Length: 267
Image (cartoon, rainbow, N blue to C red; front, side, top):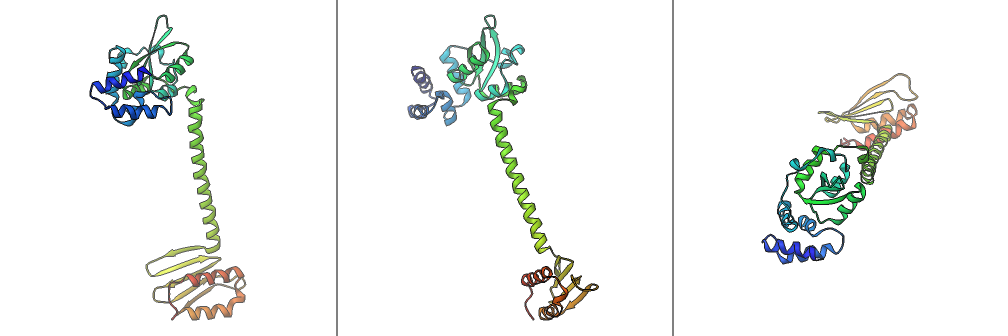
């Protein structure tokens, strides 16, 4: 607990945050295991550069440049997903490879240190480095391996992506099925400058802006094809009444539906 307050005091002494900021961060900290510096970063009251400067001062270590400290021998010591998860970047090993120098956004993050030590079997020496430099170094130096595919973090992401894809496919399928049945029931409707045209069940009905209606096509029980022009809806209805035995029930139901859609008024 002293370390937490010491960091806060250093930040206050350097005029970077207020006492109220520290108190707010400590209240948040009670609900989890995140470090004070990480919480202050998330709160936006300090920048990662400011935090790194204070942490370096607190621990008595100089600021480093990852590119100059990085030893290619450790590029595979940690998988990329673990580096990203904790915001860490392996730099080099010391003391006969028993110590791993690790650039960290927050070198006081005990959870990150513990997990990295358990994974590598080495003691971790955490060195503060800005988050954006660590992110760039991970992308540049740490290779993508099978371990980055077969881990719980990736599984969760893949599961989410698969769920979203499945939902999209289901919605697309529903749309196609609904569209198919709609076309089966109502056919195709097209609008031109001077007419609205309905096509279905071997029939075409066209409503012209002048009020005329045309019927083209084949009645299910009629010989030959119809090509009839009507001056108004009443004459069309009269024709259908006389010829209703020439059309199938489906055709008659569709023609009745088409007449209900007709934007023209009865003359």
